[in-house]
Length: 380
Image (spheres, one colour):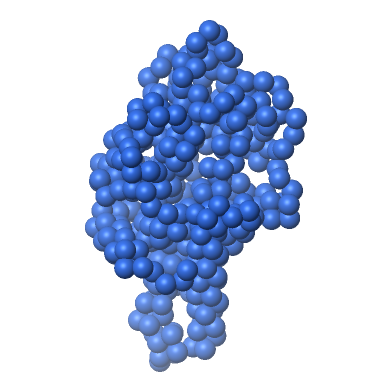
């Protein structure tokens, strides 16, 4: 479990090279200009990163969740923002590949896997965040169509995506009344709010998505009516592991920058790396990262094997890894002194990008509830 196979090492090397050449040189500029690099995303898709654990039948890469952890760590070392969007996109692809019928998979997965078409996941609403089962967006059946009305919030990729998986209420029966519906771009009544002004994640758009009498065929429904909440929660299990891996990658990059800085920076006549107190802090940083990596690998393995403790392990790994990544980035700024506060050193961007990972895919407070056996939102 803790040794990479030759194939996995090849994946790591390939993704690391892609990230170093296509992401890292542009990361700061994209953050400053709020540029969403569609061409780079398509290049990632050409390398198989658009449908990492989707089946090969329709263009997916057919890899494991453990492989995905390795991929997202490497991507996030170069740019956590783009890595995180690719994670969300992969969740959309997996949902269609896992819960769609043959016609839906054939129609949507190939262009999503290549990232010619981008995907967004629409669950959160202005009045329904952690309490996802309280969502109010409605889908009312009218013959062979659903008519959607409502608003989704904090949607990554909104306005740029070609497909939106929307969790909508089809019955007033709590979590059992939620249905997953695919809404394509360009349909009448679909509109978007302004790009949110955010602390981090500036290189991917985040907008509200509004539905005003949006009509889509009933054939765009994933699974049966009322199965949407289960689909959403299963998707989030993998999303939590992926987001933890993105935090790990960002934290690892911050740690490596710090080791280099302490070796090069001299104070009181000697490199800072010779200060025992600072070595102790490096040791704690590295231990946090390795603990997170171990938990992520175990959680990913449990998902691959379909183990009954997968939900709990994913919550644990997400909580530990997202806290670790942010903590290490914050400590890295401190150990750089005033230089860490400057944008040129890249650390403040890492910290800004990683902060939201402790909130999305279920807050770390909700993760603690899941760990202790309280399944949120199971009502009705």
